[in-house]
Length: 152
Image 1: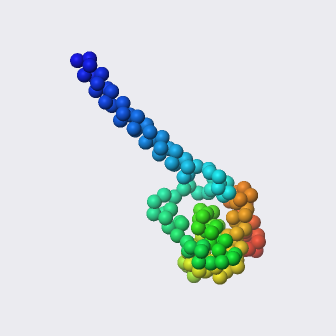
Image 2: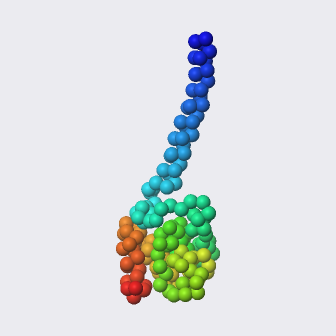
């Protein structure tokens, strides 16, 4: 009898090891994806709204391909593609929101509007520069408002 209990216990050991290994892999993956990483915009993400998941996150990242553009427009679309959470928290001061289709600076990069508007490009590039310097999102908003919005 004692040997049967012992052998049954040993058959569970590989399952426990596999479960622990899988859990560790999930924790590592989550820390890599959501944790503060080497990104130059980590401080902006740290002060950002909670991370969105699922369909909401997918919609957040839908912008036009930066390779469709050149020069300053290319750089601005790269900011939008790689740092959507930053631009989604910022107001666009060019007046594009008046048509009802754009609600934040990220929306300008879902169409070609961002490539045609010096205000949108300037705001995105300035926001990225400030975020790389570790400026908190509230201060980025204030600086963009003072420069592009007349202090609105």
